[in-house]
Image (spheres, one colour):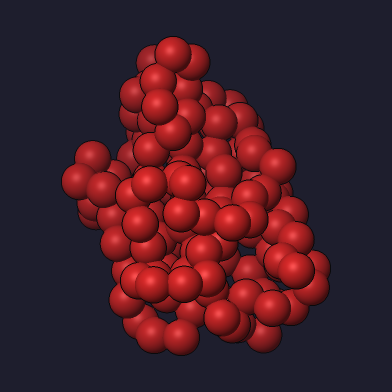
Length: 125
């Protein structure tokens, strides 16, 4: 069973950068697609980016395209999200998640079986 542990995040000024990492301690991510979601108060959880473990496919929501980069380190069982040119509207709790079946990503959080513990990202203006 996948166990996702997140690191990174914090407080940064607008225009700055942060990096989030998500590591599977059980080394079973090879069968999964991994996504990063975020949720801010009063809003639904939304997908930010996703990556296929077994191919080079990636997905980004429009608002982060060109600013965020998702990557994987297969040897370390880690998926990272590099966030550049951060904006105040990127402020949220960020979660990594893994899904097993079907396509490598889905915008519906219910399609993901395993979740990291969440990490706060705050971008000040």
